[in-house]
Amino acid sequence: MERSFISYTEALDVIADHQKSFAVITVPIVDVGGHFLAEDLIADRDFPPYNRVAMDGIAINHSSFARGVRSFPIEKTVGAGAPQVALEDVNNCIEIMTGGILPKNVDTVIRYEDLTIENGTAAINLEEVTRRKNIHFKGMDIAQGTIIKKAGGRLSSAEINVAASIGKHELKVYKMPKAAIISTGDELVDVHETPLAHQIRRSNVYGIKNTLQEWGINSDLKHIPDDKNEMEVIIDNLLKDYDFLVITGGVSKGKYDYLPDVLKNLGVVKQFHKIKQKPGKPFWFGVSNEGKPVFALPGNPVSSFVCTYIYIRHWLRSSLKMDTNFTYVTLAEDILFKPELTFFIESKIKNLDNGTIVATAVFGNGSGDFINLVNTDGFLILPPEKEVFKKGEVYPFVYYRNEI
Ligand SMILES: Nc1nc2c(c(=O)[nH]1)N[C@H]1C(S)=C(S)[C@@H](COP(=O)(O)OP(=O)(O)OC[C@H]3O[C@@H](n4cnc5c(N)ncnc54)[C@H](O)[C@@H]3O)O[C@H]1N2
Ligand code: MOO
Ligand SMILES: [Mg+2]
Image 1 (tube, rainbow, N blue to C red):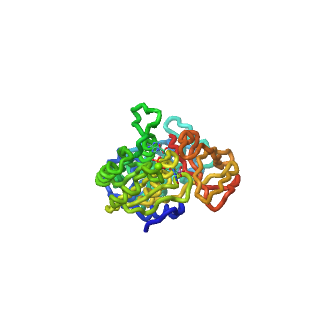
Image 2: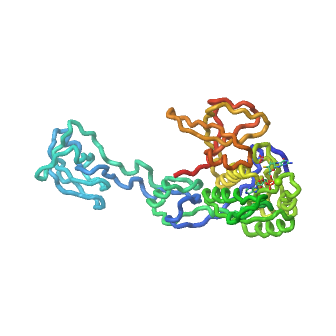
Image 3: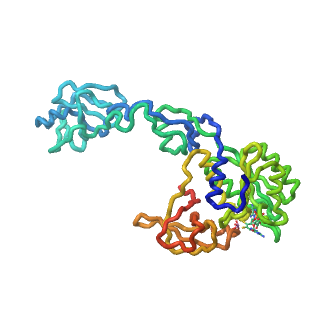
């Protein structure tokens, strides 16, 4: 159904309705970082797989210590990687290293720091020793056959460690869709060019490309002048070659804002045009006859930036069955915003030593002022039904920095 001037939440719902199922591919483990997991990771053994010695020292049978024995002749010395041995006499000990398999007939490990070793005998310098100390017992982390990580979600170093330990030399991951990011507008020149007095360099598409890249999506950049016929031919071809399109500019009320007409002529079915929000109001979203989403973002750089972080993210996370919530932060100061629109306001955040993260709005000069993005960390999402947003209240926050 076609809609106009809908709310932010309605727009999110429409976009989620057009989520896709991405194909599954297999990628070698060394290249898998940042991909999205498409299979469950299952423990192939207990973790740890054997009673693992957790400290370098000696292994004893605690009953001897309990009987008052304090000096233990060393029967043998064993390193990690050696098969399991057995203590023959419970009054003796086995010298053993971290990572080794716990010998039979022992149940407690004492570290070197608590021992004096002389002439092949280890004396324990402790009044008390807890039985089972310094042993990482078989299966205590997870049992064989248990799902460690369900499909879905992004592979971080934590999951990659686990994948390696269960022998996954290659993993099933989602094949991310490929995007064309298209700038429109006769005033725009290439980054290599020197603009004339009435021109600017096209910029917002580079930021969008980088954002998509951070989300694991490859894209190509294209440019189309404000020429209806040229637009139609180029977009028609791009719809064939790419999984989704991101177009910036040409969607408002201007004489040369041809995009909605062009997309209509190409059979891209409008799902909505205009959202009750600031910035980004003229956002147009449609789906081609092959089901390919077309995100036609308003050209103003802050508007296209916000719409990318809100709506393209929402489509991707919905498609990947990931939760779509944002983190919440606390307002450092009151914010006044009267219009009945969802307000995305650029803000700086600060971590306080009491554990709260506070956000301070930084008002730039509207959605054309992309310099203001450099001075902020993300944007607050303030709902339309209020005018005064009080210091101390909490609101969702979209963080756009990707620091190491
Ligand atoms: N009469 C009205 N005019 C406008 C309205 C309105 O409701 N009534 N809405 C305003 C709002 S809000 C926005 S946002 C813009 C959206 O405009 P378009 O999507 O049609 O975009 P353009 O007109 O092509 O460009 C707008 C602005 O952005 C600059 N731009 C465009 N592409 C790029 C790029 N790739 N890199 C850098 N800058 C870009 C362009 O030069 C313009 O300055 O419409 C308002 N007008
Ligand atoms: O809504 Mo426009 O996107 O503010 O400048
Ligand atoms: Mg325009």
